[in-house]
Image (cartoon, rainbow, N blue to C red; front, side):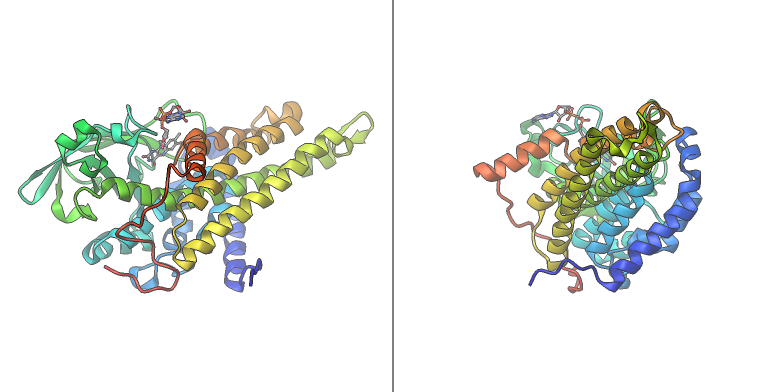
Length: 405
Ligand SMILES: Cc1cc2nc3c(=O)[nH]c(=O)nc-3n(C[C@H](O)[C@H](O)[C@H](O)COP(=O)(O)OP(=O)(O)OC[C@H]3O[C@@H](n4cnc5c(N)ncnc54)[C@H](O)[C@@H]3O)c2cc1C
């Protein structure tokens, strides 16, 4: 039987994240956004206390042991206040923690996953490079084996939490012949710690959105990484990178859904307050149309990410459904943010109201974790039979299932 009700645990989690973000983050976010300031202690400290940094990681690995729907609910509530908060869920809780849970060895889980889930260490994800985003096989970073270590060289750009995270899931070529042929079975995934010699990072200085968040680059100047830090097997890096995106995209979908709701709520409040031609602007049909579109986008986006979360809970492969949820929600959030600014008129064109920030923030998610165009092509390819998901060696454990090492 289909059941659309959330459990008591879901409701409790949703309320506690909502209340924390409204109380501890919302009053300061405009100023942090203006100052391009990542409020590390307030945000990461608060999220760790709430258990959000290890939300869907089993308790035996230091997490809160909640289901994947809770991860989505938290992402939605966080992005309702500001995208920078949800980005932390995407890269730390989604791309890194869940990948370690599925692909990490027991030793890697103890060394990295446990402190990450407890929130004492923060993790990022390094795939993109200056010359390679959508075309991941065009990355140039290399990892050459020397004895029991790999020597990593290269640069990653547009990396969320580049100046904040303690370690990164890094994809690099271990087979240079396959690099020449663009054969992805020559790529390998590693955990690289910030403290390793030869690692350096810096911010993307000209970024114009998600300004209360941290986005930057890191360089690996012959960084020696122990072989124990290879995630999965050598040659599985591409599959692991894509697996990680299934988890990150889920949080992006749920987060963009929260952004649509934020635009809707701000627009409704403004439309009831602002008057033109003797009536509040909510009385004008063209304004109603924009608000109604936000509601249909919100409800549809929410159902799509909930379906992905349900599939994750059940242990079902959800690459296709998660991609659709991410694509739909992010494009709809761009529409909602544009219309929210429109409804606010000139006031929307100022940082006095939050909708201008929503407008700047929404665009990032239409670009990262698969651009709008890449997702469009993927969905068409599934339908045309050009693309099918093959089983991977490691899968995300179903909610409550025993975790294999
Ligand atoms: C705020 C922010 C945070 C980010 N955080 C991270 C992070 O933590 N880790 C990380 O690894 N990366 C991160 N990224 C990078 C992001 O994943 C890439 O920007 C994204 O994959 C797109 O790559 P690109 O920018 O190189 O664009 P390109 O791939 O160069 O694309 C340029 C344009 O061409 C289009 N295009 C490209 N190929 C095709 C095609 N085959 N068919 C149709 N159209 C196509 C694209 O859709 C786009 O419109 C972040 C980006 C941003 C903006």
